Each structure stands twice: as C-alpha cells, then as structure tokens.
Amino acid sequence: MPFAIFLGVRLGLAGDELTARLPFAPHLIGNPMIPALHGGVIGAFMEITAMAQLKHHANFDHVPKPIDVNVQYLRSGKPLDTYARAIVKRIGRTISSVEVSAWQETRQSPIATLQAHFLMD
Image (spheres, rainbow, N blue to C red):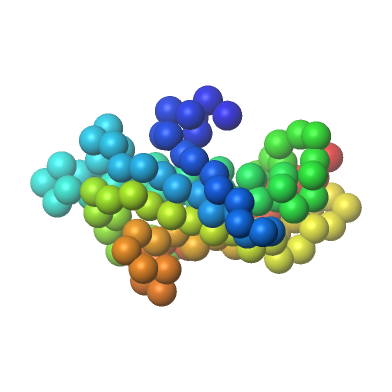
C-alpha cells in the first residue's frame, strides 16, 4: 500500500504473531510544540496492522475493506518508534473483526487501541 510505504511501516513475523513497526520520522509529527505523533498517522498505522494481520491470518488474495474503525487515543505518541499487534477476533463469511494495540516503550502501556470491522469479499 502506498501510504504504508510513505509512513515507513515494517512488518515482522515471529511464529504466527505479526508485529508492525512504525519507525520515527520528523514528517510524522503532528504537534511540534509537544512534540507528538499525528493522530491520523497512529490511526492509519493501526489500520494497516489490522489489514496485514487479516491477510496473514486468512491468506486472502485481496486487501480487506474497512467498514468501521474505532480508535481510542490513550496518550500522546512520543517521537519514538511505535509498535503494534493485531488480534483477529472473528472471521466470518462477509465480515471480520480485529483489535489492535499500539505502544512505544512498553507493550503494557499502549498509546492507542483500535477496533475495526472489515468486509471480506
């Protein structure tokens, strides 16, 4: 996906766990006064992670289409690398449900979470 390339998203696979990494870059800052990552960057990163996990989990030929995405911003994203992992909650015939957690320093302190549903053609 072109936006994932623009963001610099990297995916790593350990067993059946997919971990996404968003390397810090100055163009990802939304508020230079704090400085904090742009909320849209964090949301897009987690959505990309969810789609990648779905594609890996069910081995689809196509990219699943988001139906609804709900992001909970828990704390400011610092100018550091950000990581995310997705859990596929359900894969149905037409709709799938995925949850994502994004963190920076420790996985136990997420900066944001995402819940999304995807259309499975």
